[in-house]
Each structure stands twice: as structure tokens, then as C-alpha cells.
Image (cartoon, rainbow, N blue to C red; front, side):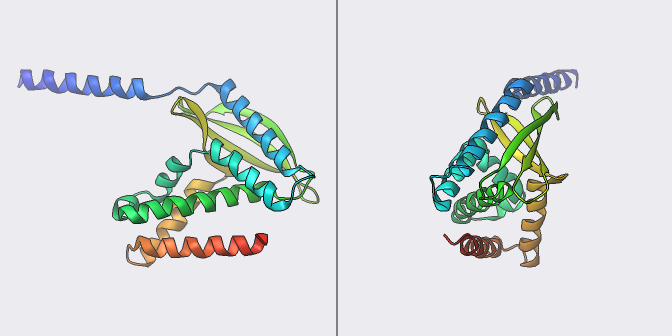
Length: 208
């Protein structure tokens, strides 16, 4: 028993050490600078008066695609249903999710020129991620707060969640997606149908 105990303890120690080595501690200054640069890019793209609305939307999408951990957020949101999906469904889900996510985040800033963006405070959420607070101002609407949850992913800062007025985008979406699948007896395909319809509606609304 002593030998088994020693081996088990050693195994736990190795596992914990490996996890500690893999964890990437967040640098608050780096997280702040990342959101500042990303926000400035977004505002510049939205306020570019020489570009059409469609081109501005695509530029905003490109910026967000670089800034957000789309794969990580997408898998987190699908949660336990990821394992229930076929490889084909997983691939389609990620394609649809990227479109929905980027369009939703773009809508937070709006398409009309005159958007302004300012930084608030940055605070550590855990050792591995931080919350960077910002204020977005749009013409003819009250200013509103966006908190960007930033983590180090693959050696680079990435957005892993957006909190709008206290509501987490990824937690809310996770609940909504799970409800759709549950109402359809665990059929992930039903969610994919709903996501296609949502994208179609967003596209029609944008006039793209």
C-alpha cells in the first residue's frame, strides 16, 4: 500500500506540474494594450468614410476574427453537445458559429460613422485571464459598457468572452443553444438549422 501511495502521489505531482507549465499567466498591461489596439482598429474601420457599408463590415469581421478565440469560444458554447455531434456537424457548426459571433460583435459597435471607444480599468479575473473594461459611444444612442475577457491562447492575447452591461455573451449563447438542442431531443442538427436561419435574417437586415 505504501508503494502504491507513493506512486499515486508522484503521479498527481507530475500532473499538477504539467498543468502549471501549460498555464499561461496573463499580463495585465499586455491585455490592456491588446484591447486598446483592437478597439482603435475597429473604430477606424467603422468610421472609414471612403468605404461602403459592406466593405466596412468585412474589415470589422477580419479584425474580430484575429482578436477572438473563435474555436475555443465555439466549443465552450456547444459544451457537452460537442461530443454528441458528428464530425460533419462539428465542422458546419464552427463555420456557422463564426459568422453569427462576428456579426453579433460587429452589431455592438454599429455601422454608422462617429463611433468612439475608450478604455476603463483592467483587472485580473484569474491568474490566466483578465477583464478589460471599455466604453463605446455611438451617434444618437447612450454610451454603453463592454468588458472584454482576455486570455493568452497559443502565446498571444485573445478575446474569450464579451460582457455587455453585465451579461456574458458566451454564457448566454451557451444556454440558448443548449435549449434548442434539448427541445429537439438532443438533435444537434436542429441547432444548425436555427443558426442558418439566424444568419439569413442578419444578412437580409444588413442588406448584404
